[in-house]
Length: 596
Image (cartoon, rainbow, N blue to C red; front, side, top):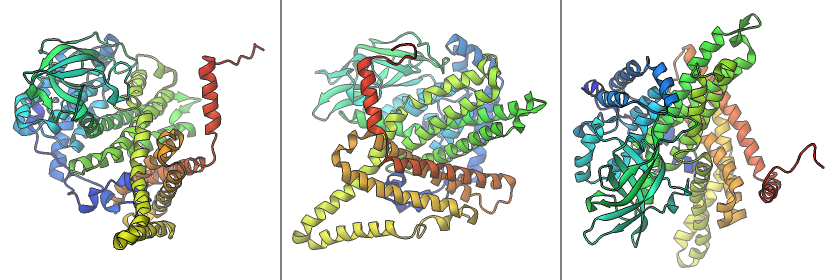
């Protein structure tokens, strides 16, 4: 029996998209603009749909809450038993985002993210088994599959008869997805012959349905996507990898040896595989983000209890200022991560055409926040946290993968910056072209120049006019001014960088990283302000503390953004690059106190 499905009604974000939502609010920041209509009011669910989601979350709680000893044992053993996978099937957790017409539960991205959040409070490996199936494993079928493909596969994927995996990464390619060597050659029959190896595939050993990306090198494009079943001749998986963390989840290589893939199993258009892969990863980031938020909430609960119960010097360690500082920092990170993940889920659910930059921001921030939180939780537990009897060390190990898989933090920062400055660069290109158009097309030429001049004058105008101050409660006015000011500063600095470096900006990774960090703080901070603003007129202590969270985040972000923007022009970048080059040549650390 599918327990979750019996309690379910369609769960969706209720706020409709507006015309202003067509633009990317994160990219607009690089042009010095805040798209208030895209971020306010903070998205919410109506009471009925929220109650339905609560029933799903409660079912997850009942299923996972008493399995801590199992999770610890499975981590040591490096795998989940078949009876646990079967229990996931019976609960309906493989059908969370599959539409009801195919036997799934049909959750929205926001609701799905919330369910994975709850799973991750108990165990990251359990959450990953579910998430790798839904977030990426079969997400391509949902987004790009034909009606025939959906009818053929989705019912079995919803029931868990088929478990899905996403096969992109290869030996030597890492984050460079465009450099894959797995090949698919079209046969005279129209079928494809697939050959190659994929590595580090989550669910690789338990999956029997793979979304595989292979080089086709056709006029339509270099990479195509395919739906591949394990029972196709020539498909096999390797031994389970022994990992630092998430050890209970299945991670293996997957091999394709002259696998004949039917023509009907081409996913989307031939040659569009890279775009499909990126769309899947962008769309699935709310699952990973939700998992990070759930992990943080679990860490906070453990740390608060530890701080209250552990005695040192005759009193609870929670009474000490440095412990309070850690607990508060964990809460600020969690609130901020939850805010941005929920906002991105809304953008996806509302049909926003461009949410890739926002999704990347949510992944970077939530994953790094979870790593910080896991570190602080272990530190608060001290020596006990280092021992395997308690969950802290497992949480610490599990969290480390978050900044690596589905796009490393470094790659995603470059993506965020380049995506943002591309729009600003287009504006500068338009301005350059406008000078040429003045003679041949004066209306168009002067119009472009007027638009640009208007934006530049607007950026030089008084901070806070016609922006977000009016959308926040009085208590948050100063915080709103911070984000208004630094949005303008980001726009100005983007102009400076583009004019200074031109097309070579793609090679200026230090500068790109700094621009991305400012954009991350801005977008996350705006999500925080929007969320707290939605709690206005609430006189509770919870609201008062949410105001405090917004204050803390805005002030800390202000200091980070100020340092980052100043370092754009005054830095030690060349010295750092010179030092790295020296070490590459030396092939070791050459200094030693006891050597001359």
